[in-house]
Image 1 (cartoon, helix red, strand yellow):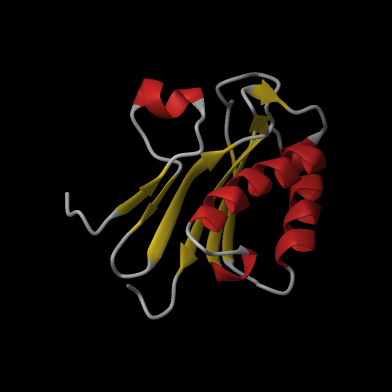
Image 2 (cartoon, rainbow, N blue to C red):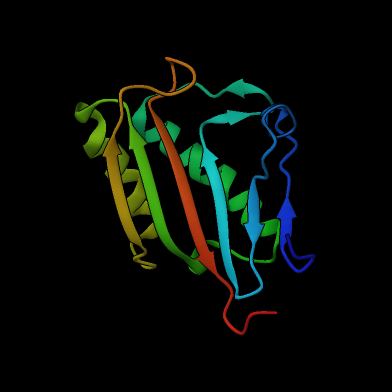
Length: 132
């Protein structure tokens, strides 16, 4: 792949183990952030759907920050939720974080995540105007 693709690591152990990057910036300015959960420093953060959503997006924002981007640059989000009963709490967190940004968004109910205590995983796409 081209050298003009910029790859960012968060240092999570799974990146090396499974061979992926936390974020990838393409030459056209599109930034793709891998699925983020409420795992920080290798530990699952406590909390319900709302708290896990906020923490998961914080992990994504930290990756964007390494590229000089922020929440306002987000153009698409995906939220994978393990139970329909959690949709309102996940949506509430999303609204608080993105109400003034209004990215395209999807919320998908899934059967499970890599750890049963995780109830939400998020993906983020951002765009750098005037691509490098």
